[in-house]
Length: 276
Image 1 (cartoon, rainbow, N blue to C red):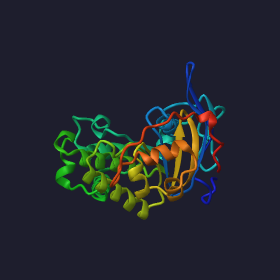
Image 2: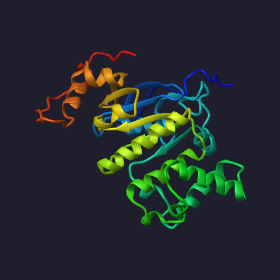
Image 3: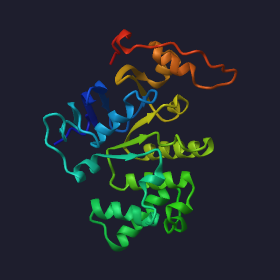
Image 4: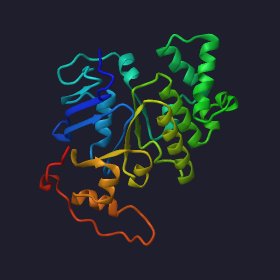
């Protein structure tokens, strides 16, 4: 049996190549139960490919992904079923509209996930749908709506409710608030913080926006050209970054009196190996 006191996730030396291009090169990360880790970097840094390997949407070229010590399909492990994978990890994407069935009412969308992964039926199923939608701030009227009748923030709440339906150990949020305006971003971040306080779910938060990392993540891992260049507690990394690339990301975050600095070329091979 898995050790409940152990990490929820261990990804060891993950590599992913597409032909001659190496998208991810030797990434290792550990995530404790109830923890929240941000993976940050520019577009093309390898952060989303790393998340997709953790979620099982991409098979690593090499390396392993383990849940509480059980290997669900690394370079030598057995290939997990879709149901096994869903019980471990769910993913919320940047554009909720593209991940929802436009012809399906949102309450039915959540009910479908519950029917597939649980034994709930009839009244018990309906009550659980209402509970999940209520948990993300949606009411019965919105449950009867099609996705096009909802705002972007409301659609993202539906996507989160559907992801939580199977009670996953890990929720991966891939640029999940990037397409929302600032006020709606704040609402979704507050929602995610509240869910985390009330459950033991862990978050893997994929983003290029350092401005929101402090509000939701305990730790941060910085990627560049497929490699980890820095990692550590969020406040330490963002307040006193050790690596030039991290410092350039922090300096690019708009703030009062901010003026953009000219970026210098950074080469991952020149960086000192990250600690941890």
